[in-house]
Image (tube, one colour):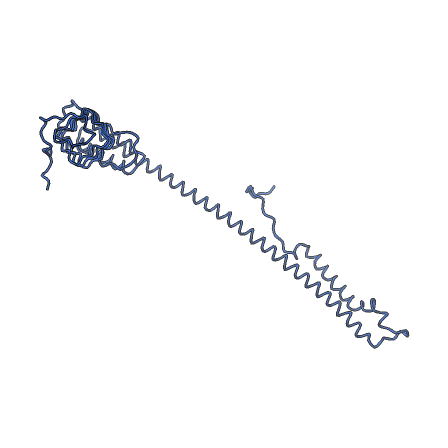
Amino acid sequence: MSDEPDTGQAEPERKREPWRKCHPRWAWTAAIAGAAVFIVLLVWAPWWFEGHHLRDRNGELVSSAGIIVTGFRTMLVAIAAGGFTAAGLYYTREKHRLERENFQHAQEQFAENQKQFEITIKMSADREAEQARIAREGQVTGRYVEAIKLLSSQDDTQRLGAIYSLERIMRDSEDDHDTVVTVLAAFVRQHAGIGLGVPRPDEPVQAAITVLGRRPMRREAARIDLRRTDLTGLDFERANFRRARFGGADLRGANLLRADLTDVWAPNADFRQSYAVSTKFDGSNLRDAQFSIEQIPPGMPEFKRVIVDGEAGTNEAPLNEKKRD
């Protein structure tokens, strides 16, 4: 048995040049025999074929014998030359055909090698990308676990660090976007639920609201859930809370300057004394929501079923808002 490994492909037949198809010994023998025959014919053939024209009735050579012999030998040389020429043309044609076949085979082999090389490069790149993705996910997971631990701390500094670490994770990893948003919303509900009596504004809660309000614009699986939360006095300036749920939330005195509250679900929410200037409420559910009388834009259909409290004061900036130019 052969010791060479089986590659699964048959080795292509080796191309042999025309003059090497025969065994070298037989080739030389045939060449020598052919040369001998040609010499014999060149010497004796004129006498064999034209002997009756070379002698007269008395057996003497005729005067034109030299011309006849020379012409016959010239004919033999011409025939031999034609044979050599035909053999040379045949050899040249066969050689050209074999060279073309070898060239085509080389091209096919090169194309196959190129294809295998591209497959190898792609597999290597895919493998490296997968390893990088796994490493990156491992780093994100480690950062996420550490941030969650800090988020449950009683120290405000650690909780602030956890919130901003979660923001970085949300921006770096689109796959973790919804998870971070859900965690931060749950943190706000846990630490700013109505009835907890926590002083406002609470710095970690404000940080969570700020991070949620400037989150990347991506398609989200669910609405941000901030129902029944005490958000009094918090800063929502220019924040994006499109489609968020504020049902029953207390936003009295909140800074809603140019906040985007489009399509929010906020029945029974309390917006009295909030700084709602240039705030977008388009398409929002504000049924039974409470507003100060001067916060209601004329002709806005979103405000048809809100409760207007004329005693709630005017639409002034919250106490923590600096004087604007």
